Length: 350
Ligand code: BYC
Image (cartoon, rainbow, N blue to C red; front, side, top):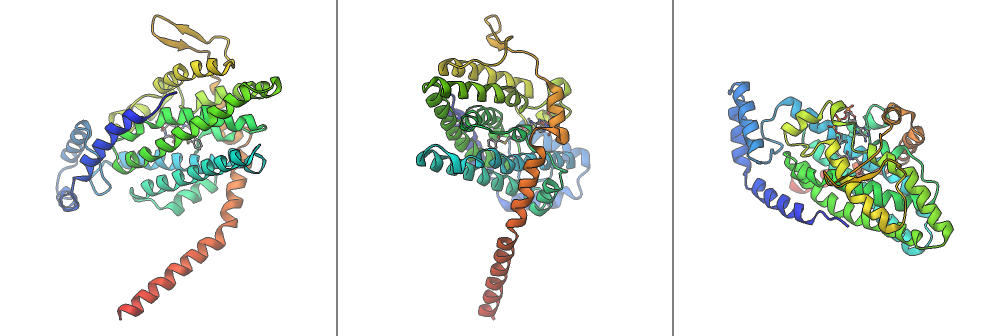
């Protein structure tokens, strides 16, 4: 079982370092930036990135860096929120009270991750309302993985084991992202994802060691989730338009293919431990390079899902729109309450 522990110690040390940049220094820098040539600003920015300094919200940054972060962080936030749906679907049908309590906690964690990530995106000058409106209008991307159905309880296990497993693999390097608020949000998210991955693996282990029918259920879920999990890491490096620039800016630390390979290398032994078979006839250990070779991914399927034609795209968006509409009264009540508090505070001060 892998863990993010060591990477996090490193990330936290750097976070302390970032926090030492005091506010007034940042303000002075931003005032100076208004009369400094663009090329100098860019050179300084890259030097800071190269020196592993965190870029903070009030620091000067190239507009394309800001836009890339808004794109990635908002897609990530949307994925967490839409990601609550496939598992949320099983809360009422979890096979025991304990499983139900664990699943509620997990789904709630995903909602929390969405909130930290929307907050991180807001530090870049975009509003949460705007981002949510883009999601509900079908104009924003979220992870392809959440457009697949969860027909059995074993799918909840497979999501925890594979989907959260892939998420941790992709997100541990994001704890070292050059943008401070995103990197810091990722520290807590990775800790929680790590727990999620273990709960998924434990569900799979229980099923794999259960009756032949339960083991078959676990195998069928693995068959359903294996290839979509590999697609989560994004297109191959040769077809990834954003990777090179994002890696130069140290937003991404490892490429899509590198992370996918790491995931396969970690997960195959876990499948063996479960006594389950990865649905890939070409999967083979390559002793020479120390990695598993795996079969070709169906990228047509990936692009179809991204175009909105996956098995559950429409259902997921419809559920989000319904939830947003159902929650309107509470948003209005919260705003009215805040306004009442503000008026009271003004009256008390007068
Ligand atoms: N699904 O140049 P590329 C979770 C898009 S949440 C949909 O490689 P980039 C969890 C990509 O956005 C999981 N779209 O892009 C939650 C880009 O489109 P645009 C989400 C995808 O950004 C609840 C285009 O393809 N994790 O784990 O350099 C329960 C070209 O791609 C996908 C994150 O969001 C995909 N799978 O790299 C359990 C992590 N892949 O914007 C678990 C943060 C690619 O040009 N994000 N696209 O229209 C990242 O690390 C990166 O954004 C990605 C893509 C690796 C996903």
